[in-house]
Picture (tube, each protein chain N blue to C red):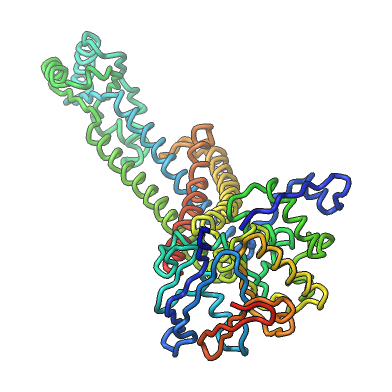
Length: 231
Length: 317
């Protein structure tokens, strides 16, 4: 049997902002193709910082970091866009572009990848319909509610069918039913081969999905089994 | 990740919003908002730069045209001056000189200038009617010559002096050189102004591109995180600046053409056409060169913005 491909690997990685003490220390972990992890921990523990390193917003200050098998910590700048295109991120603060419509926000990853609009129009429409925003495609983010923005952000993260999905509190602003649908979608995408990391405070959600758990506390990472799955 | 099969939506199930989007095929809003790249102020500044660039280019063309007219007139003509102790000696000298000139190959036409006209040339210094009364005014013979004859005037000069000792030949070389030098200085100055305007457009573009990047930092960050390359972002900024630049350039060109048209009209109506600076009109040739000036401003603005963005982004993760 062919071994699973490494999607993310950290070896003794540390991250600090400017001259401050390390936000993350000695992080060592591996995420393989088709794996699903929850990331939990108290506020300010470093969950978002860890995700930022993975989606290449921050560079580790020490240690080794491999993404899709490539040395991402030392990768030249022009190699980063290709790596980022393989990642779908649902940001905690959504990070939608206010001057673009919901449709254009979702289509953004396709547009920057140079895909013709005729090729992605259906996918974008389908995703927006799936998240219940088919009637708000031409709406701009400032006119959307928090839950609607979160769903647009989700659609944007998934539109390019990424190999790695990162979600930072993806159900924080939606009702429980929509939260459950979103999590089921992540599970389905995970079954199709995408690796998934979901950062959340919602332990009930963690238990209901039953996937392995990464716990972060004071900048250090530990691993424990989720409610329904051992690792 | 295994790619799931794409579903094909049946047209009858299409929602109105999707249908409109499919039918219109809208390109959508630019990825960088208009206001972020300077918007109206940048357009206004580029319009002013284009206006100045067109005026500098017009100056270059007008000086070039004037210099060409001045020097071509001087190049095709010679002047023979005949002096004498009295009117009789001058008349004999003129007759002898005309004989020599008419026998010389390369002389197209030789004609003595009217004495009254010659006297009139001195009136500003000597007063009306005084020149002819008190002076033996030298006679002037105007000669039109071929370039071949002008190339070697020593033989003609010697023959004239032999036939009429009071005759001297002037090929206007001294004036021609001075005018050519003055024209070159004027052209260099106009070209220098044009380059300065282009330099100013560069500086403004660098400033505006940096300010635009700072103002749109969040947008640029999101674009990077969804996989945009620096070249993609730079191309967006370049496109934005090109549109602003084109708008400003057209405004500047229109205003400048209006100003030049009025100046040309004013010169013609005030008799300026007979003055030292020749009258100009906006010919097709001139319009092409004038249109090149704002296009250059527009391109310089857009390309500078692109290079500035690429340089600024290069230092980031």
